[in-house]
Amino acid sequence: MVDLEQIHGILKERLRESRYVHSLGVQKTAVELAKRYHAPVEKASIAGLVHDCAKGYNKAELLNYAAQFGIILDNVTRKQEELLHAVVGAELAKREFQIEDEEILNAIRFHTTGRANMTLLDKIIYLADYIEPNRKFQGVEALRQQALSDLDKATFMAVNQTIAYIIFQNKLIHHDTISARNSLLMDLE
Ligand code: DGI
Ligand code: FE
Ligand code: FE
Ligand code: FE
Image 1 (cartoon, helix red, strand yellow):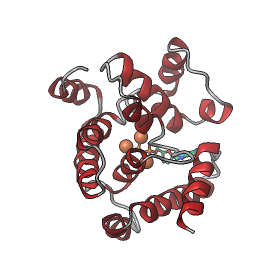
Image 2 (cartoon, helix red, strand yellow; image 1 turned 60 degrees about the horizontal axis):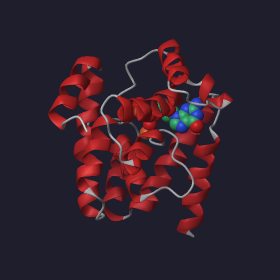
Image 3 (cartoon, helix red, strand yellow; image 1 turned 90 degrees about the horizontal axis):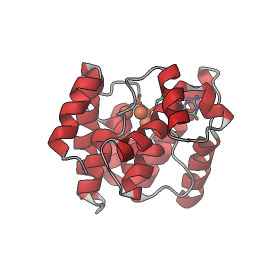
Image 4 (cartoon, helix red, strand yellow; image 1 turned 180 degrees about the vertical axis):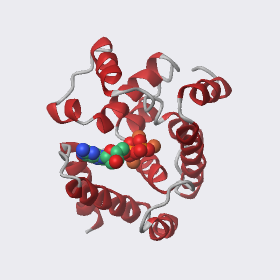
């Protein structure tokens, strides 16, 4: 793997300032959550830092990368560029940063939608992305509190709020987003 300092440098150059700062926030929050919930701290740190590595590309560029990498896109992901950066990002992490760990790559790949049966690391990255210190939206403080006491409940709440937001925007809901919600809810009951 490319060393972490070098990855920092590449991301700092490639991402907008605010996106880079967000990435550092996710890294920090993911490490805190990993310590609290006994997840692999180093993996959380790497996945947190790298998760938005493809966020600087526009839709055409993301579609180009996807084609070049041989990624098969479903028709929802093809239409919604906010979903594309996650799948392309996982592949970039692998090819450019030489991250081979599938747990890390999957946490990046599913950081936007979630998925059925999310791993501990998946949940940590999904949630850290939502509650890192630079995030400011209605209800974020309640989620930060929930994240300190119940990771599963907090992840469910974050997915729920995301779905409500997608509906409000009249956008397509990806099937992995629905699977994430159903799976988390079934495990809570
Ligand atoms: O990249 P970030 O802004 O840090 O956050 P993200 O990757 O978690 O989410 C990017 C956006 O994608 C966010 O506005 C929520 C949205 N999103 C999550 N799931 C879905 C979705 N958008 C659509 N259309 N469909 C989904 O299933
Ligand atoms: Fe993202
Ligand atoms: Fe997210
Ligand atoms: Fe993010």
